[in-house]
Image (tube, rainbow, N blue to C red; front, top):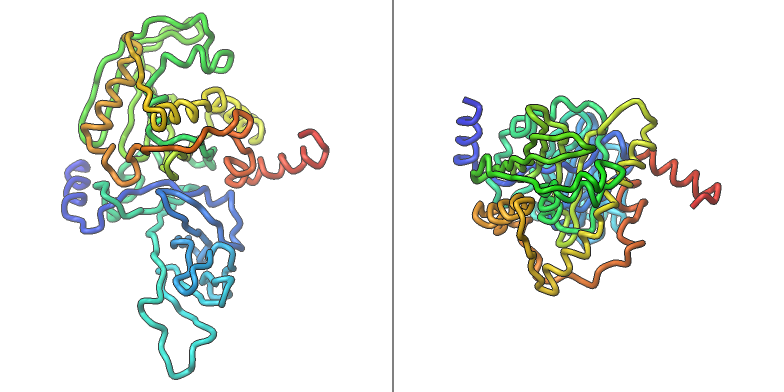
Length: 364
C-alpha cells in the first residue's frame, strides 16, 4: 500500500522534484541567516519562529546575497543592501523606500523552498525533473531516517555525486584505500558480485568479500536520489544521505558510526577515513576533462560496471543535478583538496570550536 501511495503521489503531483538534506539545524545559529549551496544553486536558511525557512540567496531588487543580511524582529530575512524584507514564502513584505501610496509589486519576490525537519536534519524540496512529490515527506521515502536522533556528520567532497556513488559501489578498494582504518591490504582478493535489484529508483548489488580476515556476504545499494546503504547479511551497517552541490562537488550526511567518544574525535576519524580516497577528485578530472576510460577486467569491477550502466539507463545521468560534467578545471593540489573550515567545520559547532582552539594554541 505504501508503494502505491508513493507512486500515485509521484504521478499526479504537479510539484515534481526531490527532497535533499540541507543542514543539521542544531549546528547552525538560530540568530542569523545561514548560506548553503546545493543542487547547483545558492540558498539561505534561517529560523523563522518555530520553523525553518529557505529561499534563494539573492534579493530580486539589486541581487545582493540575502545571507549577508539579518533576521528581522518579525522573523523575516532582511536584505543587507536596501533593507527589503521577505517572509518564509518568499513574499516581499517591506520596502523601506516605497512611497506610502504604493503597494509592493507581487513580482518582487524570491523563490522559496518547502522545508521539513526530520529529527535534526532539515530537508528541502528542490523542484527538478526527479519524480518525488512534495506531498510525500522524506521519512516516507527513507523510513530509516526516523531512527537517527543525533546530528549527522556533514562533509563536502571535491568531486561530483556520481563519483561518490561509484566509489561506494566498489568494495574492492576498501583493503587498500582504507588500509588500517577498515580492513588491511592482506584482505584483497577476488570479489564475486551480482545484480540483486534494478529499477528506475534503486540499484542493489550483492558481494562476498573479506575484511579483517572475516568473510562478508553483503549488499551495496543506492536509492535515488539521496540515499546509499550497505549491508552485511541482513543488517545495514552503513547509511549515507547525500546531495549534489555543483559540478565537481557533493555533500554527505552521515549518521555517527559509533558512540561513546567525544564528538570531535568521532568527526576526526570520519574526516581521516574519507580523506583516504579524496583523490577521486583527480580521477574525475581524468574522466571528464582528459576523457580517460576505466579499464576493468575482474569480477570485483562488476559493481562499478552495473552502477554505471544503471546510472545511464535509469535516466539519472540525464536528470538535472546528476548530469556528468563535460569539463572540470585543473585539479587542486593534494593538500588543498580538503579544507577543514569550509568542507566540515562550518556545518559542525564542535569541530569549529576545536579547530579554533588548536589554532590559538598553534597546534596547526
